[in-house]
Amino acid sequence: MPRTVRTRVVIVGAGPAGLLLSHLLADAGVESVVLDRRSRSDIESTIRAGILEQETVRVLHESGASERVLTTGNRHDGIELRFDGEGHRIDFPSLVGRSVWLYPQHEVLKDLIAARLAAGQDLRFETEVNSVGDVETEHPWVTATTADGDELRIDADFVVGADGSRSVVRPTVAGPSTGNYFREYPFAWFGILCEAPPSSEELIYSNSPDGFALISQRSATVQRMYFQCDPAANPDALSEAEIWDTLQARVPGTSLATGQIVQRDVLRFRSFVARELRHGRSVLVGDAAHTVPPTGAKGMNLAVADVVLLDCALRALLLENDARLIDTFAETALKRIWKAQHFSWWMTSMLHTAVDASPFDQRRQVGELRSVVESEAGRTFLAEAYTGWPHEG
Ligand code: DHB
Image (cartoon, rainbow, N blue to C red; front, top):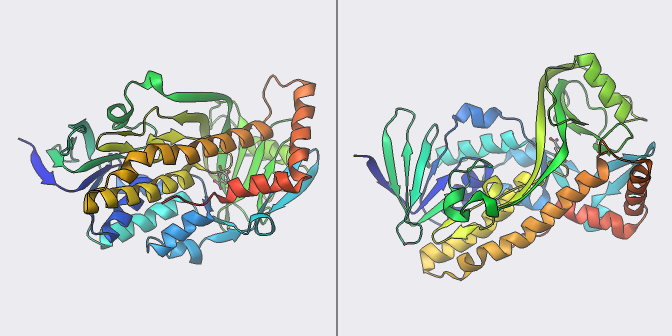
């Protein structure tokens, strides 16, 4: 017989979406259990993107989830788009009165895990969910296997799938995968972390005939950079010298400060939206609901926006028996999700060079970039999306 635990909300996934949701719900007195198949150290050490929208920062800070986002994170007031040998700065405050913060996702996760554990959250690592049931009733449940091999059953009022792109909750909510929205791209990013001083104060998104590169930062001594590569590329196949030559050739005009490469990875690009985000008393948030290609760093920000909305909807449902917000959750969330899908696709297509791009395609792309940077309307459109649209909820 599995051991049975009773809670109000069972949250599958201890990533940014699941942890933040447990944090916001606890503030309203709504108890939850959070499960993740990964270990705490795996979660805290996986390198992801580093840009937080202003509203993401506000939620993390005002909810007490992270002090360090403001003390350790760095505010960035602009980015540079580089093409045709020239840089063009997009100045966020003057265009939209907002900024973004550079604060890596794994640091957000460390803060959230520490805050949840300090508050006594029931948070179980290395616990694998096996099945989800009865979501069409008011008494849904999940079963799971713990790190010790024990069987666990969790009875709840609501099930949340915040368990990433390979979600086990997704089939329960969205049905067969054939109905989902999906797009693949013919490129990937070769990402490095290196021990070097910053090569630039702000991020540089560079379109070059050889392909895209992004110069990002992490700290005074560690930098994050990416260059467009083949999705089948082997991250270990290039020497450090080849990596630096590739990066340098794609940011003409900047002399990159080089240093030892301490981590390398290849990131695949996908756009994905689940066909359904809610079914009865189950819902999907974050990467379980949608994936965006990395250009523009929308992934975690979108997860936070989902969670802010879901937090309001679950408070109303579970504390006041008011189902209106949960009934409109998917429709409301999808408006932002599809805007972010468009933005991530647009930044990706505008900045990367397709392998089969003709001379016409390349010149048209430069024309597109020029129409953005030379027009205040164009710069404003980019700045609005990059710094993040206002949250609902
Ligand atoms: C980073 C990643 C992104 O996808 C992006 O658009 C900007 C920055 C980063 O990892 O620093």
